[in-house]
Length: 267
Ligand SMILES: NC(=O)C1=CN([C@@H]2O[C@H](COP(=O)(O)OP(=O)(O)OC[C@H]3O[C@@H](n4cnc5c(N)ncnc54)[C@H](OP(=O)(O)O)[C@@H]3O)[C@@H](O)[C@H]2O)C=CC1
Ligand SMILES: O=C(O)[C@@H]1CCC=N1
Image (cartoon, rainbow, N blue to C red; front, side):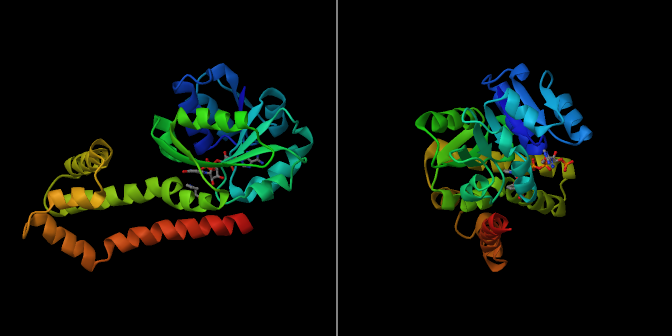
């Protein structure tokens, strides 16, 4: 069975992705949360899953268990479940920043631990995930996490210290992309389009441009050049972007999110 300790947004996204990919049936998923409204919401969104109040009950039922609570809650949650963790369990933390070493320090020796950074598009099978395995894991554990995350998107194994950058880029990245789409749409509205049409055009332009990268294998710079006629409209727009340091601002956002992940690991 597949378990989730913490049944919030990300647990819901991962559980739904696994169920829709037919990796687990809804009846084989159990999630805990001390708060009834969170349990009710999880069960309402995923018909057929089980929810329980007690985190330890998840460990009694599931052998693969996601730790899906906020980083700030993790130590307390681990201390409370530690005596119920058995060699049969594979624990997978999705908490931003929290290191394998810190997780292990609250759990029995040799606990099989994996640290993962997923993102919300896992909900629709378009996630981008990174993971690092703990020292007590075996090859089957790596395959298990690859199979689960692979069912909801792309997945890459990385060095643990790279997970902060994965967090800043693909973990937080959807929020940055939504901000870009919002800005594109606002530009359309400023030019006289309705909000509805602007948003539709902005979304399709973003999806189309991203898919051009995968379809052609060309670099962003090459494809940008194809759009940019000398002295044309795109050139004028790109000059404005450069003046306002738009690209630098986006890079700084990823770097700030990465740094915050590092800090969360220490707190
Ligand atoms: N959202 C995202 O895009 C991503 C999030 N993450 C990581 O996923 C984790 C969860 O984030 P997210 O799903 O967004 O957050 P949520 O707040 O939606 O989910 C966390 C859940 O854990 C519950 N909870 C609180 N205390 C306990 C406890 N003692 N035992 C069990 N459950 C508890 C919370 O209840 P209550 O709300 O009532 O406190 C809430 O339902 C975080 O560590 C985050 O870093 C990783 C990648 C992407
Ligand atoms: O904002 C956060 O801390 C979490 C981690 C990555 C995305 N959301």
